[in-house]
Amino acid sequence: MGVEKKILVIPGDGIGQEVTAWGQKVLTTIAANFNHTFTFEEGLMGHVAIEATGDPLPDETLQKARSADAILFGAIGHAKYDNDPTLKVRPEQGLLKIRKELGLYANLRPIKLFDELLEASSIKPEILRGADILFFRELTGDVYFGEKKRTEDRNTASDLMIYHRYEVERIARKAYEAARTRRSKLCSVDKANVLEASRLWREVVQEIAKEYPDVETEHMFIDNAAMQLIKDPKRFDVVLTGNLFGDILTDEASQIAGSMGMLASASVGDQVGFYEPIHGSAHDIAGKGIANPLASILSAALMLDISFGLKMESQRVIKAVEATLRQGYRTMDIANKHTVNDFIMGTDAMGAKVL
Ligand code: ATP
Ligand code: MG
Image (cartoon, rainbow, N blue to C red; front, top):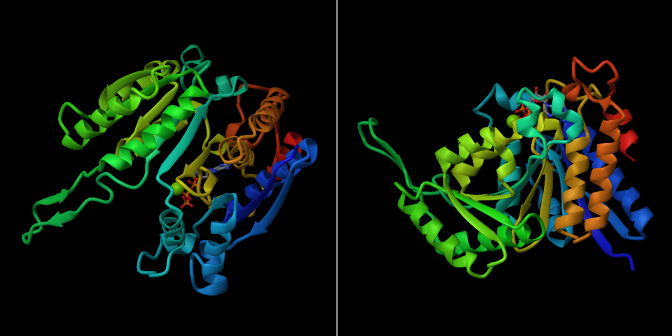
């Protein structure tokens, strides 16, 4: 029996427009092949929304988001805002607002190096081969949202690192559930030797761990984790961490997969899931038709798995990406100077190879 799902597509700005079209096409193909009914709506956000309505996140988009089963997002941003920090209405306000309104507290970032891209990385192949990590980064707490202060003389500053038990509990449960569907290993990253917020973090994770005796739990300090990630990435399965440590670790880890153009992410909470490539609107290559569409296609695969529970369909998409890479097809960001067999192509040609 097929499922019926309503998907909101928000292409946004720059290459978001070009790559999201391919994430959507892949979903359409999966629906046709597996007898599912996916209906699509489109929403405005970012610079395009400001141009059309004056608002980076129009109410209409938010309403559509609330009634959707999942959201496929591209990117937001425009060169004019980079050069003019005085512009009051800005594309990124749309993204921050939708995350808040939809209660998206967990950011998931799978880091998987396709064997076909091993040689393109600057890290040794024997270290990288087989690396497959799923990060859970907490999104609503930590120093980003704690009280910020500056003394009157402006010479002393502080940011409050704050976590509440419920914030750690809810993301820990999600991470443990995911670990169960993978290799049943979870590494929680903190700095509990010095930070009180980290001590709470560790205590709560230890408690939740008791509900998942089948999952092997490890606790690691952030400094060690940053080192282990490069030294031996294969030792990690699910990595669970806070907002600040997650911000840094996931960017570090993105290098394991070669290019930003290869990486997808999901933001989830208790309502609808939000799926997007980790890259931005890339104004330097926007409109040229050369952006790598694989991150958007892999975001669609994540949606199938996480929001719809369609594991087989999700795997089908990942296999199609693998097959395309195996045949030597590359967009310019993942082209390997040393591989003469590469066929370097644009967004649409690459997307069509995956379909
Ligand atoms: P934003 O301000 O929207 O975050 P940005 O200027 O930070 O955009 P990113 O989109 O994050 O830029 O991209 C950083 C670099 O990586 C750019 O040089 C861009 O061309 C490249 N890049 C990003 N995504 C892709 C992709 N899908 N395919 C090819 N190159 C990409
Ligand atoms: Mg960026």
